[in-house]
Image 1: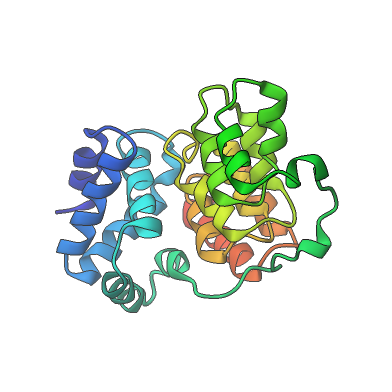
Image 2: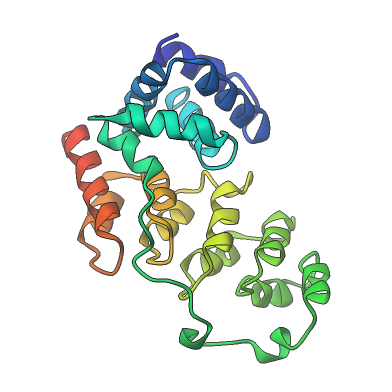
Length: 239
């Protein structure tokens, strides 16, 4: 199987869990070097921003972040070698900043005083103002319910993705959101958040535009690994 064949196969499936599970099955079945070569080729094609390449890469990135077992991840990481754009997806370095409650600039104390169970239940609300407040919650399950709420808009998602400090687990929920993971502005916010793990931020970079990548490459608040990866993607695309 080559990159074009896999792209067509994944693009023919419904976005979300079905596509991601198929991508995980393919990556697990292929020899690691072949899987890495296909991943690298699709990442390099990402600037086309069209199906089937973009659809396939979205499924593959979700699989890498959430579905592959540890031995498969280790095998792909070992096989990445000179495929630096793939190696970045398996980075094990820490974010530029680590979460610290004491560094929160603003806290909704009224909402924080509620129990976790109450906040998780309220995240299903039809009250838009309440939903906006809950987007700042530090509990990943609360944020997951906000993301799944039909009334949730890009504004609430960007609030959660851009919040500093922010828990890694919340940023992971946003990246894995079926509804919001392919949103370019959301991916940009994840890549620019210094609390994003470098592997997650690197995965978010893969579907960004050249202007976005240049912004990431120049941002000194985020991990140097992410900035370097942004420059490599720009060079690979000839931008």
